Amino acid sequence: MAHYLVTGGAGFIGSNFVHQLVRETDHSVTVLDKLTYAGNRASLDGLPAERVELVVGDICDAALVDKLTADADVVVHFAAESHNDNSLNDPSPFIDTNLVGTFTLLEAARKHDKRYHHISTDEVYGDLELDDPERFHETTPYNPSSPYSSTKAGSDLLVRAWVRSFGVKATISNCSNNYGPRQHVEKFIPRQITNLIDGVHPKLYGAGLNVRDWIHVDDHNSAVRRIIEAGTIGETYLIGADGEKNNKEVVELILRLMGESPDAYEHVNDRPGHDLRYAIDSTKLRTELGWQPQYRDFESGLAATIDWYRANEDWWRPMKEATEAKYAKTGQ
Ligand code: NAD
Ligand code: DAU
Image 1 (tube, rainbow, N blue to C red):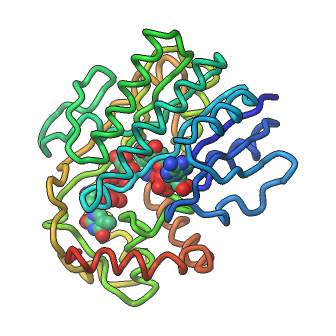
Image 2 (cartoon, rainbow, N blue to C red):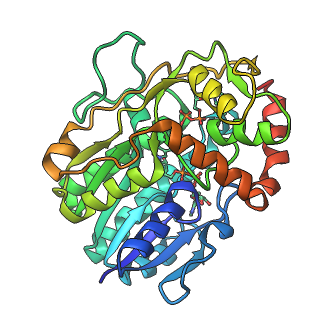
C-alpha cells in the first residue's frame, strides 16, 4: 500500500485517476489542486475520506509542495492549464502552472528522492498531414504549435533534465485526446453534448477535418498506473488506443446517438494555428509493459459519456454559461 500525491486530482483526468486508484487498489491519496475554473470539488464526491484528502493549493507554492511530497511515496503530476483556446487568449497562467509548477514539483521530488510520474500530451510533437503514414512515437522531434503545447513540451524537457542531471526517479507519458465523464464543457466532446441538451447546434471549427486520436480516460489512467508499476526510470511512453477520427465524424456520431439529424451542426471560426492531425504509435507501451486498452469501441464509450452528461447536469450546469460567453467573444 502506497501514498500517492496527485496534482490536478480535481480536474478531468486526475479525478478519474483517483477514482480508479480507490476502486482497484488499497493506496491512499492526497490531491493537490488549486480549484481553478477547471477544477471541481464535486469530481471527488463519493470517495472515502479515510483514503482521499483534498488539499486546495497551488503547485507553484514551494513550501506546500515540499511538505506534501515529503509525505508521499509517489507523485503523479496531472495539474496543468490544459485548454489550447484559453492559451491563445492569455498564455500567462500556462507559463506559471505548466512550467514553474513542474519545476517546483521536480525540486521537491529531487530533495525527497520520490518516484515522480509526469503526465503530458501528444501535442508536444506538433501535427501530422492527413495522409502521412507516420504516427508519433517516442523519438519524434518536439515541435509544439500553441502556447499550451509549448509549455507542456518545456515541462517534459525539465523532467528529462532533472532525471539526467539530478537522478530524479521520473517517467513521462504523452497521451492523445481523452474522452469520458467529468471533462470540462469547454472541451470538444462535452461542449457538443451539453449544447445538444440545451437545444443548441454543435460547433465545428473550420471545415471539421482535423483529426484527433481518441482514448477513453480510464484507458489513459490504466496505462499511467502500469508505467508507475513497471516503467523504466527516465523513459517516455506514448499512450494511445488507435482512435483516429476527424471532428466532423465525431459530431455526426454524437448527433446520431442523441437522436438528431447528423447534419445539424454549424461551422464556426477556426482556431488560429489549429493542429491538423495527431496520431499515436503506442507499440512501446504495449510490447514492453504489456498494456492494452479496454475501451475498443468508440461508439459505446461515447454513448456512455452522453449518458453521464445527461445524468449529471448538476455537475456541468454551473460552468456552461461562462464557457459559452468566452467562446462567443471569438466567434466560436
Ligand atoms: P483539466 O483542465 O480538466 O484539469 C486540470 C486540473 O489542474 C484542474 O483541477 C485545476 O484546478 C488544476 N490546476 C490548474 N492549475 C493548478 C495549479 N497551479 N496548482 C494546482 N492545481 C492546478 O485538465 P485535464 O484534461 O484533466 O488534463 C490533465 C493533464 O493531462 C494535463 O497535464 C494535460 O496536459 C494532460 N493531458 C490531457 C489530455 C486531454 O485530452 N485532456 C490528453 C493528454 C494529456
Ligand atoms: O491531444 C491531447 C490534447 O487534447 C490535450 O493535451 C489537451 O489538454 C486537450 O484539451 C486536447 O486538446 P485539443 O485542442 O485537441 O482538444 P479540444 O477538445 O479543445 O478540441 C478537439 C478538436 O475539436 C480540435 O481539433 C478543435 C475542435 N473543436 C473544439 C471545440 C471546443 C471544435 O471543432 N469545436 C469546438 O467547439
